[in-house]
Length: 437
Image 1 (tube, one colour):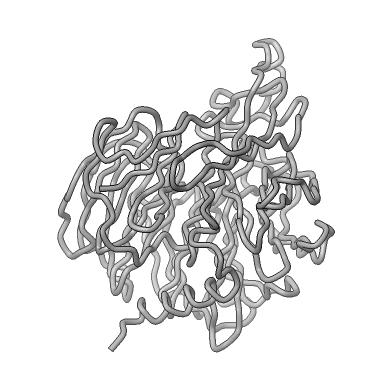
Image 2 (cartoon, one colour; image 1 turned 180 degrees about the vertical axis):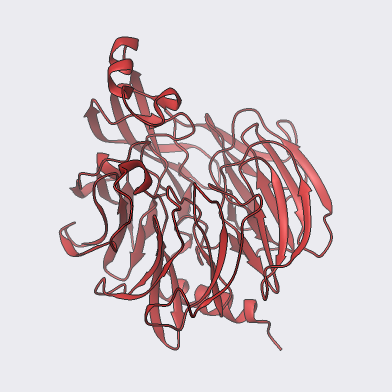
């Protein structure tokens, strides 16, 4: 008999296959959006001299993950002309996170196309020049949202700096849209494609909403404001989550955490289905995960917690549909991963944990070490954990902590890993690697 996780994964994977049959890894965290692959024979050991199929430099900088389809890989990036120290001090004056902000004079946004087999760069497409962009956090980049590749089109999103649609065959720009939003620390939410709608999370300092663009021309199809927030402090109103599509009793739901609220929407209309008040959390980054019964969501900063919420409710279900919540050593940037009856997390400071999905009870906790932004990848009952210092630790998905391998590359690993056939794509701050044994 299939486990609940298997049933959920089959449903999610079949939905992605139905919508995007020509693409293997078309969005952030893969076909299901949950960082799970059914590939076999993935590499376990590598370094700069071992099991590198190819290594290609990427212009500029960006923490977006690669996407691929039809024999091509795409990544987004940004080149930067730094602002003077005088301008920097002026821009960060009075901000809550001023000391941790980077300020640019101008940025140039890029989409880069590579050959999947050889790693050769095929195109470097200039999307826009942006003068005096908003500051970003030093752990962020100007190209952090992962693009979406589907039906012969590439959708590149850079938050306030613009959203662009390209013909993936020719690289020709088809349309662009710019939705003004003050991020405070830079963009982070990746776009999500639902049929002919590109859905964007827009949780800024002063306005918080979700919107859908028509893929035909980039025009706005719908816009839904987030629920009211108790705080008047702009910094506590922002968030950076990527939507997760789930299906509940033959009804599609788009789950999008934000400051104070977890919310599910009808993806076709933007109408709210249910909401949960999670308190004072803000700057949520992790993408939710779903096991067919509960969705697991992170509250962000302030009180950093992980919540398990049943998804069959309507309206405000805070008092009726929260099964459990835990707060110790939870992530604020890496997303969780769920497999069978277990949920796994790695927090920003390198603490890995395993929990029962039924009651949130801890199964084990282990300090892996390092700092983490990338979300875990699960395949072949292995979990791949990529740290800032270029190290990928591979552990077993099980009821005891077991380290299987530790692999080192040059550069920083901020982007989440990608599976291609039985290989991995790993993006550092300077290069894209294809790793295979």
